[in-house]
Length: 197
Image (cartoon, rainbow, N blue to C red; front, side, top):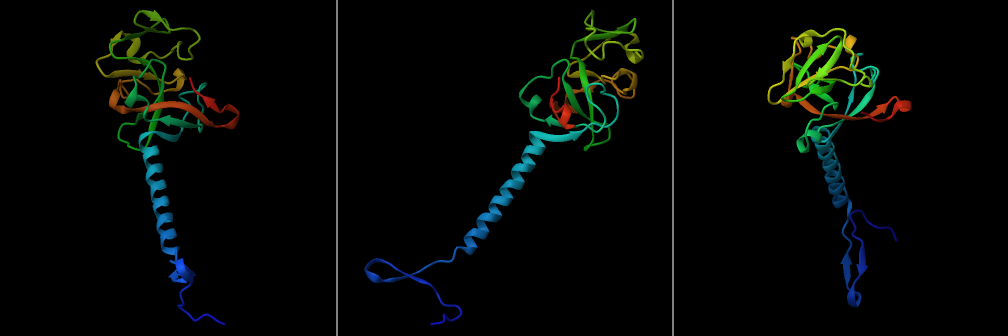
């Protein structure tokens, strides 16, 4: 016997009484929409407050990081911890909210920094030869000793011969509020994938 349009399915309940079977289409659709919405909110939250993929532009961090390398930025790193010397950080570029400069922190609040005979000197000690930024052929403001104020950081590119950084007046010292997080990992290229130091 053919079912008429709009007919309702029934199941037998207790003592043979008929009970209508509720269609689950609406509930399934609602749940799907909620899951998609939650995923979007979660994705936005992770990108905005925790982790974000960023790309290196330019040669200023070579040989550590190359142009077009894809990196992971930990935006929560300094909300829960301190900025340390030698951290690689993302800085909000002057006049931009969606472009980051990637540099290395070499000077912390209260530090004295200078360049003596082509070598970077921090708090009276010459930096180790193992550091890619130790030899500097363009001292800029570091031709004289400077002292960092509270919440000021001195950043440079590892490729000191080709980096616009705190050595130059138009860049200057960086405020803590301008440092948006720590670069922690390289995603691409695959052969160089791994943690960054």
